[in-house]
Figure 1 (cartoon, rainbow, N blue to C red):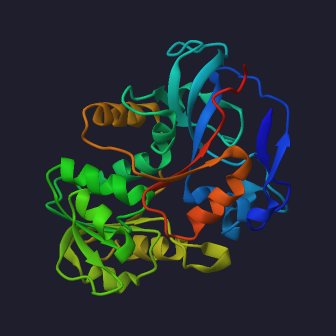
Figure 2 (cartoon, rainbow, N blue to C red):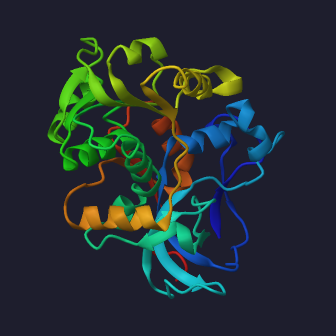
Length: 321
């Protein structure tokens, strides 16, 4: 089968389009014929091997997992022993390591039936980013005022929609190029190229941001919650973890809740997102799609930071025929 592989860390040039063996589903796993795969920020970090603190899990000298990609949508080609929720031919979305390939194995508890009103491309843009937004918003119940920094990106577009659906007044921070999108999603817009953040908020989601912890706390209510969702300004060793650790330590001494987020993609959350999507409450925002052979270009485009919503890699619908 065709797949995007790498055998060394680096920029997108290390990604290669090659033939590899098709995987076999194990206990509790699905073999999925991939139709589309989302490109999230984690793809770049695993490709680059950064931050270095993650190397013990990723592989110190070279990637432990050769095939990139995580979030996906496709059809079940076969089921492993013990699988009860799916059968061959079912259309699903979820996560599986090595999604930039014609086939991938997916744990049954990391998959859900594809929303009936979405294409495969749209569904592939959901699992990682929407689950992250959903779990970040759970950090503060009944938040009246929510600030989403990075509101025009993959996670941000879902966070704005989910917070609005929960009844919050949402303010989104983004660039001029994304302001119209964020406004259409229902948020008040702060264009960071023209103005500073003002006001106070019950919940602040800082998505891959680089603002100082002290600055963010100034815009947080006395008992508010600040959630760091990723980070791109902490250096090669810690990445965005240094602000997370600083916030966690400071939370021991102040009323404000300052937390990082390590998101997962359980079937329960995927099913909840499917319900919200089919009800029309949230909708994926797609910027561009790339064919599988051009996945390296998709990663470059995503990492440049100008994406409105999500980037998706499309696998030929003729795969496996």
